[in-house]
Image 1: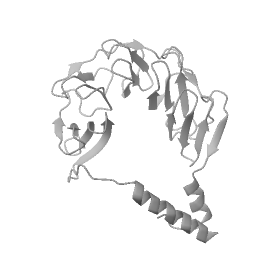
Image 2: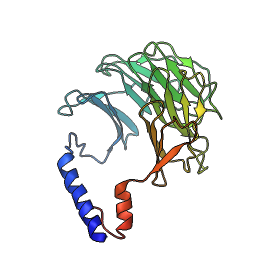
Image 3: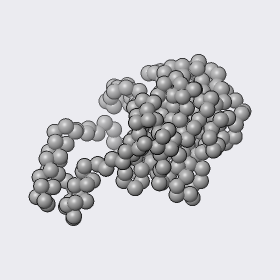
Image 4: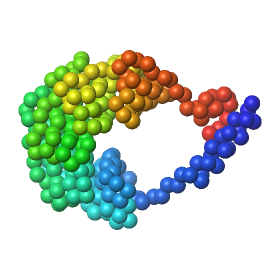
Length: 270
């Protein structure tokens, strides 16, 4: 049995070596620089948030040629480190840090304009700015607010009034369509099982908790459509739902490689 697992692992490693190739496209070469965020528009255009440790600030790095060349992006003076960044197109982007510091650029970051966020709702820390397209977008504020725009960010409407069990600390947000969105969060850092996933099918008029039975606060999630989704939990289990999570009919999937490693006793991972 052990030999079988060795052969399978070798086969996987050979397959991976042929199918996966990573190329370094930027090397800061400096312990003072820490990359903290990556926002990708397409295979050529992406921005990186680079923290400057000694200065306690950050700047942006922008490429339009797959990383062959980079330009520096400076943030507005009121933002030392954006907590969220969203690219709309090659020229336009949103950044945010706190509720009163949201900005938009339409010239690749050379200039920034204030974005007015309504005073409704609580909280101050912006966690996510997410756009489906150039017009439809969402903005979340930890323990406070959810805002939605349909005109590219010129006007925002509060959509957090009907969140089941109140708005949490946000730790994930995915917008599927102009009406359907999911977010993940928890209400207390100290509670081991307070993680939940919320769903709306009506542009945020109501948000309902999905019956996933999550055992931990640390998860990742992805929904392919309104019904089919996956949740990766801290206990090394992948959950799958095929009914949108509403009925709790979840399938627990363990990765083949993980089972192989467990059954092979002390076999090293190649």
